[in-house]
Length: 483
Ligand code: NAD
Image 1 (cartoon, rainbow, N blue to C red):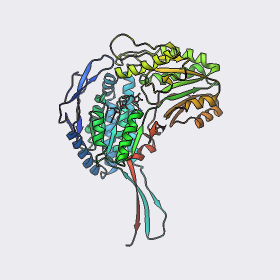
Image 2 (tube, rainbow, N blue to C red):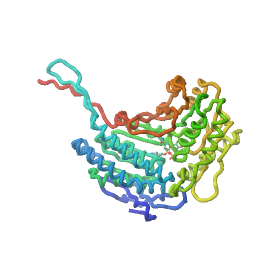
Image 3 (cartoon, rainbow, N blue to C red):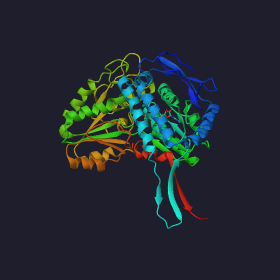
Image 4 (cartoon, rainbow, N blue to C red):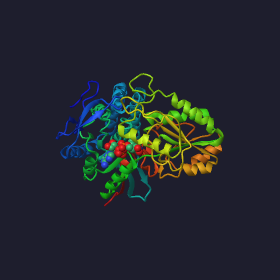
C-alpha cells in the first residue's frame, strides 16, 4: 500500500476481500485542497484488476444472496457501529482530501452509519405479495437481489456518495464493484475497511480506482453486472446511461441541479437569509442540492440581501482542520476556475458583486462566499450549475412568474421555499418541478426519505423504501399444486 503522509491512510484497491496495489504501475497523486500538499499516491486499476473484481463480485453475490438475512443484517450493523466509533478518524482524512470542515466531515460519517442501519433494516421488509387465485394454485410475487452492481461516485460527499450505493446494494443482497472518486480515495478506503473488519464476506464489496472512462467502459458492459448506479454531472450521467442501455441494463442516475429558492413576501427576510446562507455554504456549495438561484419578493429583497451579505461575510473560511472554520476550500483548481468564470461572466454582463468574487492569495483552492445582484437573465450563472459558494439574488413581483423561472431549466433536483402562509406553501409544493423540496429550511437528506431528480437531474431514488427498488428485481411465481 502507498502513502506519503503518516496521518493519511495507505491507498489501495480492495478486491475479493483483500487489499492490493493492482497489477499495473500507474499512480495518481491525491492532493490536500487546503494546502496543495500531496497526501498520497493512488494505484489505478488495470483491466486485469477489474476482471478480478468482477469475478469476485459474481461469486460474492451468489453466496451473499443466500446468506440468512439475520446474518447479513448483523454484519452490516457491526460495520455501522465501527463507522460510528471511527467517525473522527475518518472525518479527519475526509477533511484532508476534500476540504470540508472537520465537524461537517465527522457528521457525514455518523450519517452514513445511520443510512447503512436504515437500509439493512428496510431490506428485511423487502416483502413480496400473494395474489388471490382459485384453489390449486399459489400466485406469488418475490423481490430478489438483482445481482452485482457497478457504481461510480463523485468527490463532494466522500463518505455519503459511496455509502448510498454500498448500503443499498449489500442490504438488498447484491454485491458491488464501486469506483469511488480518485480525488478523495482515503475516505472510501476507510469505509471499506469498516466492512472488512465487520466480517463482510470476500467479493461482496469491491473498491476500485482508475481512469474513469477506462473503468466504466470495461465494467458496465461485463455480463456479470446487472445494475448501474451513478452520481455526478449530467453529461457523464447521460454517457453512462447510454452505455448501460446499450447492453439493456437498468440504471439509476443521481445528477446535478440548480436549485431555486423562492422567498415569498410574507417570509421573515432575516431568518430566511440566515437559513439560505447555511444551506448555500455547506460543503462550500459543492452539493447537488445546494440552493443556487435566490428569487426574492421585491418587498423584502433589500432586507434579505443585506442579511445574506452579513451572513456570508460572517462565514469563517479556512483549513477545515482548524477549529472554528465553517467553510473549507473548493476541491481542486479546476472547480475554482469554473466558479470564478461564472462570477466574471456575470460581472461582465452587468451584475453587481456585493461580497466575495475574488480569488484570494495564498495556497489552497479557496473561494469566498459570494453574493450577486442585478444578474441579467443571460448570465451563465443562472443556467449552469455553480457547484461553489455563489448566491445570485433575483427580485420578483409575481409568484407564478417566479415559479415559471424556477422551473425553466432542464434540471429538477432540489427546490426551496420560504413562506409563513399555508396557502402559499401549497402553491410552492404543487408548483415546483423538483424531486426534493424543503419549505422554510435548507436542511439535508435523511435515510428514511427518498432523494432524486425530475427531468435531467436523473432517475431512480436513493434512501427511503424506494432506495432499494433498483437493487431488487421482481419475480412472478405461479405454482400449480398438481402437475
Ligand atoms: P463528473 O461528473 O465529471 O465526475 C463525477 C464522478 O464521475 C467522478 O468521480 C468521476 O471520476 C466520475 N466519472 C467521470 N467520467 C466518468 C466516466 N466516463 N465513467 C465513469 N465515471 C466517470 O463531475 P466533476 O467534474 O467531478 O464535477 C463537476 C460537476 O459535476 C459539478 O459542476 C456538478 O454539476 C457535478 N457533480 C454532481 C454531483 C452530484 O451529487 N449530483 C456530485 C459531484 C459533481
